[in-house]
Image (cartoon, rainbow, N blue to C red; front, side, top):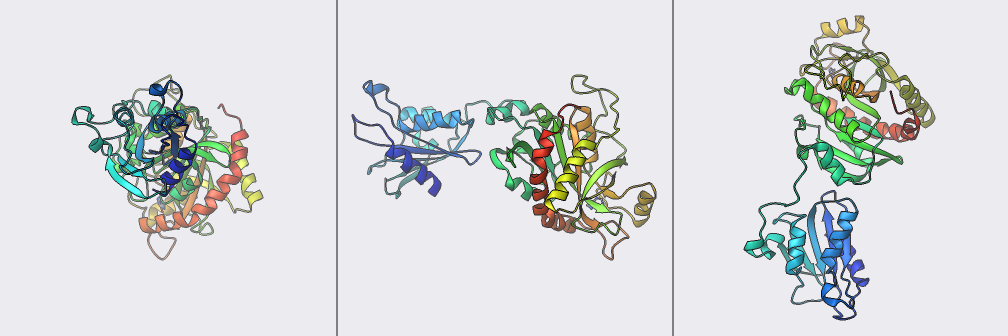
Length: 407
Ligand code: HPA
């Protein structure tokens, strides 16, 4: 709560209260974690003066936020200066009755902690937030990220969430909030959408992804990718944990995906085609964009990050392969094997996104190492490679953002 106290105290020092002499500072925490503040402003039309809460709400909305998760009001007490009746109603439009409301004295000491619902007379207790959430995920995200236009999409798989921590967030939401969105159910896939800048490039990053082996209908796997496109991304970087079929590409190797072999036996484009999104029969030549691949390879060289490359065999899972299957995949030309990326790459091509695929080798494939592959090993090795991956992406993103947009 210290950040709320600091913000409210600063705002309070700027209050304009020549008539009442009563200075108030209010700090609000938005759902994204961002803190905004306001102070009271009186003027000659005193009854029309604005409370600190109302001004803080103005700052919140102007910052592109819509939801308040915590409130702190700072003023002289006792008695504690709780928000006035009008401001209680203003606040609850952007919050829940359960939202905490703290009242602090100017020295930061806490005078009262309650909830918005407790402060509101029963007649005004609204059942839930009254700002209707848009039913369309694109509208919902745009509503939260007013004025922010991501250019590059990023999809991070198992154990790689730490890469997203390098993004200064404008919006960070749980994908369960997105209507109709398939929710990842696997440990290590956090299911978050974070919008913000990475290396100065506006990105939209999905942390955690749904997999076909979880039982999602294939077409739903296209939704996260189409959301990135609808938000304005023209390029997408797909990153996933993979097994290696080449003993020299051991755990921790970062590998550019140059092409794929698809063994899923189904496809995210199965079903009626929406011609507004993409063609019925998309071609997959140069699916993993040569221009983006060159830019990533250049960034790897200049940042001193070793980068391998190879063909990815995409399999349904959830079983890891048998050693005989691995030998077969090797004969067929695969270097890497994984249970994601391929359906997303297809959906991305279909909706006109340029695709870059990066495999993070988490293990040697079945039969190539003394121990069989495991999900725990996948998570641990991916997490260990996350920092190196983030450094590579930071080195590459400015150049990737300069590459041609349209396919
Ligand atoms: N096989 C399939 N998918 C994987 C593997 C593997 O060995 N490692 C990480 N994802």
